[in-house]
Length: 353
Image 1: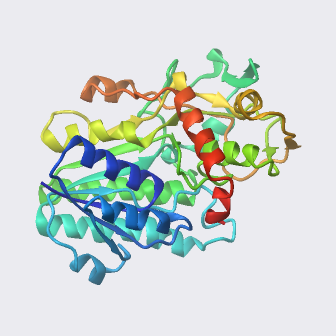
Image 2: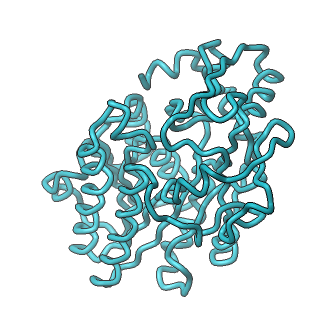
C-alpha cells in the first residue's frame, strides 16, 4: 500500500508517519512538506532514514504534486494551525486561505486523478465561537466547568458533540478548515473516493513546536522548564480556561481502520480528542509543572485575545461507537514525555521562533 502524508515534517505528520511504519511494516510512505514551520526541518532526514520518500514541496503548487507518485491514500496533516492566523500580523488572511483551503483543493484534485482515499486532520476550531465564549462556567478545582443549566443540547457531559454549531464566526482558521471539510465531502461524493474527516482537539507530545496560540501544553512545559516568561491571558487572568489533549500517535490505529474499511457505514466526520479524562486548565498544568519542575512565576493579563474560549473539550463518543476507538496515552504520560524532552532540549523553543 502507498500513502502520501502532507505536512509530514510537522509534529502530527511526523508522529503519524512513524506510527504507520511501526503498525504496517512494508508500507510505502511518500511525504511532502514545505518546511515553512520553523523547526520542521529537524524531522526531514530522520524520516528519510526510516525509508520514507520525503519531498520538500508546496501542496498549493500543482507542479509539486505532479512530481509525486501515485498513491492509494492521502493523509492531510498540512495546515497553518493557529486560530490567530490571518489577524495577528504573522501571516495575511489570503496566505492562510491559500495554505489551508487552496492546498486542500489541490490535494482533492490529486485524489480525483488517482482515485485515492482522503483522510483529513481537521480541528475542533470549526465549532462556533459565540456559544462557547458565552458559556456560563464556574471554577472547580482551579478549572472552569460549564454550568449544567446553561449547556446547549449539543454539549454533553463528555464535551462538544459533532452536532454543535459550526456557524460563523469560527475564525479565519476555523473557516478555512470547515470549507476544506465541505469540499472534501463534495469531491468524495462526486468523484467516488472515500473521505474521512477527523476533528482533532489539542495535540500534544514530545517534539511539538509549541507556541502560545498552538501546542500550548508543549509551550507551557518547555517555557516553565526554561524559566521563560509565562502569562495567563484573558477571562479572569487566573488560568482557569480548559482544553483536552491528545497524543497524535493515538490517531494512528484509527487511520489504519479507516484505510482498511473505506466503505464502513458510519458518519464521515468525527471528533477525535482526549476528552474529559485528559482535560485540564492552565492553572492545573502550572500545578503539575511546579511539582515536576519546580517553582516559577506566571504573570496575569485578564484582557482577552480574539477567538479565546473558556472551555473546550471534545466528546469522542461517536468515534468510539463507530470505529471502536479511544485515546490510549494518559494525560500524565503526555506531560511527562514533554517534560523529559524539555530537559533534554532546553533551547527547543528557540527552534520555532
